[in-house]
Image (tube, rainbow, N blue to C red; front, side, top):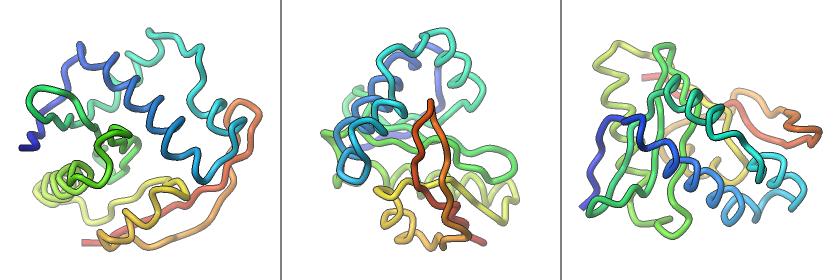
Length: 154
């Protein structure tokens, strides 16, 4: 059973592992090796990552106590991070997280949800009624990556 809970500071290391391995294993289908290495580099400082996770305070998905995904929702409707463990793709983790974010957001009165979505994640977001607002190219550590600003109005 998938359980969604609030973030604890002690989760940051596990969330880094999910971020890193998802990008390196799943997003690698749609991006070059050089691009995924820039997006999820080997040398990110644990302190910098800890500060980022503390700042976005994501929801954490667990199965039997193992962290299998995480996603955040900011006050303005931004979904900054949304990652599911590469070995748990297609098992409902993402769906549970997205349904949770949408429920929480609607309770908070958020009417527009939006995110910068990878090529890989676009079909997943579309299943939840998100539409492409614009296609863009972003630069991460010198690499240019294509993604989409997607939004959903409730």
